[in-house]
Length: 163
Image 1: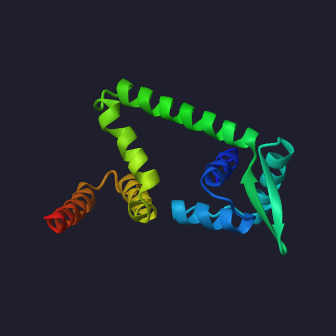
Image 2: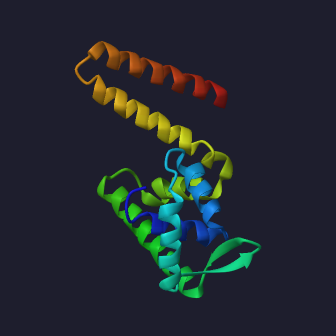
């Protein structure tokens, strides 16, 4: 995981539910499909967050179940507000469309809709594969056209499913 972001991923997870360290590892992997933080990264981060007063835990048998403290909830809320402000500025800067009708709605939908969220790891893996293939074959127009054709066909098939 990108250094420094694990703390925010943990806070994001705990803002939605209580979780053990093992649960956090599983959730990060389920959400990304490619990133599986090690126990050697997760547990020291949990200890650091606890020392900062942002999280606490209770024992359930041998497991520690972590949750946000009042201070942690406030901190997580501040992060979410800053994230929303950032996305709004990006959407406006890139002149994508009105932020109230575009990127923010998509982000809200992804966060609230578990069915769609199940596809995110596959979508991320697909984007990664396309990026790697296009970079690897940047000087081979024929291969790039085959990649584009396959993506076009896949999109056409998905659109037919919508009908």
